[in-house]
Length: 368
Figure (cartoon, rainbow, N blue to C red):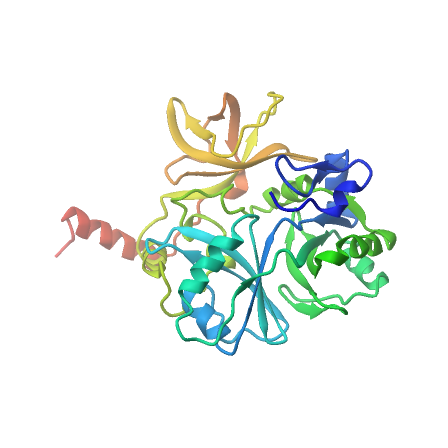
């Protein structure tokens, strides 16, 4: 467990189980509404932070990750994945390129493993990856009033998604894709020693404190997975929204690319990420990894399970492609249904024909 955040000393703060940041401040549903309708400040300082300076950093990262990075401009960011040789997702990275360094934030507890991998891949290149979590911390400001809070605090307001602007005294602010039902979101990287003061400034100018439980509820609504929670050791990018947000399908080789390209062009991902609606009758929410069942058969697994202020109990789940949209599913005995917006994508004619031809070859029935 990392060093507890100073924001845990705020009135009503309840820590994440075995964690170092507030899960909530006494009213998770009210905090969700603040993120959806106002401006909520979320302490995400448990995320690991790395920095990669060096003249070769962008071409080097481009060769290792799923995203097109060799021409990433100053003041811009991106999402990327690091894959196993078989195409399984090992790390999800959020990047910020600023003033000659590439900043990376990743899931709590995963930074050391990523740094070790990057160190092994340095060879003689001019790059110096470093794990700097002890010195830097991440905050997220979410909600339609967030930009007004930034401006009132005298902080820059990035406009386009993934735009990055520097903060006086170090760090940056980065626009992120909306979460929930379109709630604007920005991340702020600040010196860890200034975390409490930076939070105070934002709270004074109109933000309300909100825990990561509220953030997760809107994240689930937006179908944005968390590595290690909504994924397992078999997850490939094609099964999640990361295929569009963190993968560049036209770039050159990287580890695991063959799997991604083959499934995208000719195959079909074995599972898909969906939003499940649970009946909510049980007092205890299912844990991540709990099987999704169709009758007696396991047909998937749930990841994040949350109580949403409008949707009730919902979960992100990886389910088999063969699971019908109207299937009567169960999770730990609770009835569950797939959200109607999560129907499988329809194949265009070219891709459908290619896939049919591959299946014909495999079955030995290709027409002559």
